[in-house]
Image (tube, rainbow, N blue to C red; front, side, top):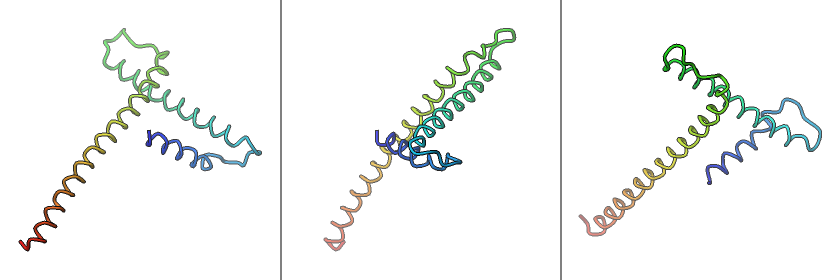
Length: 118
């Protein structure tokens, strides 16, 4: 959840970089939303076309997938990519906790050995 909030803040904070002109008061947020949605739509379309092409390479000749599936495949691909990234971050978080735990145990052992003069 925290990563989603950070991603949202980065998107909103980076919105000024997307704007080429200064719109009238109140239209900036609407333009930013339109640009974000356009980016997502373009990314889904591009990913969908790539997936359709990949599927058509695998299928035998004469049994091609329709280009009408490019957008739904693209959105599913984007959602899968987001879930994969969150999974990688969760796994990395567990590894970091493991390293921190081992570090604290080793630090306590070092303090005890130092206190005993060993």
